[in-house]
View 1 (tube, rainbow, N blue to C red):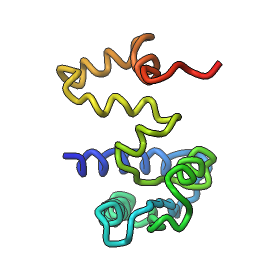
View 2 (view 1 turned 90 degrees about the vertical axis):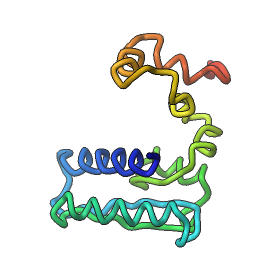
View 3 (view 1 turned 60 degrees about the vertical axis):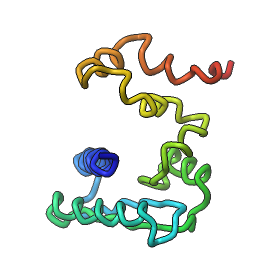
Length: 141
């Protein structure tokens, strides 16, 4: 299930990037991770690349940079925010430890909502995900 979620999310993100104005017809997304090349993160990235090439008719591809070659998790996160890295894979435990990733706390509560409609109603409210993300510590003043 998590694998399907990863593939669906990554594919949707790639398609959004592909249809954005200013992108050339041929696009290579750079995806990095800190795991070794034989790890599941790498295998999933390869599967994602295969699906991306197929869905884009070959006009999109990925470059996988494994083993922390571009830095540790915090450095990859910073590169992602800066825009010098398109994607990076990270496990939920590691992302929850990052200060900027408060919105991902919702992923740790899969049974909090009855269905997708309930989640969408919650996330569309003023007291939804934004406030939930700061339950650990208040925002910096």
